[in-house]
Length: 95
Image (cartoon, rainbow, N blue to C red; front, side, top):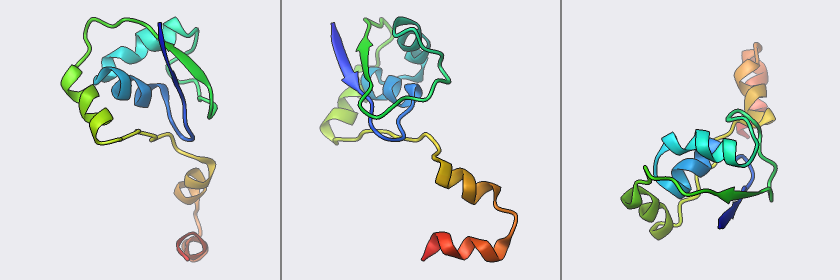
């Protein structure tokens, strides 16, 4: 059985696309690792990769060849920017 290790800001959806080339694998990936599809991953967390019949090899290989590691989870810092109601306070984020 293969495994993968989560990096900072990586979600199960990111790993499904990275490893299987399709977001459809997220449910099986979560179920196999006894997680919810919305669970936040901890950097360094190791996940087992079950077999998935719907793998899009072309997309998965593209990520490997281009060394692309998707990590799209929103961080607390991003939430602070999004939820900020004071436009003058936004400047500190772009210095």
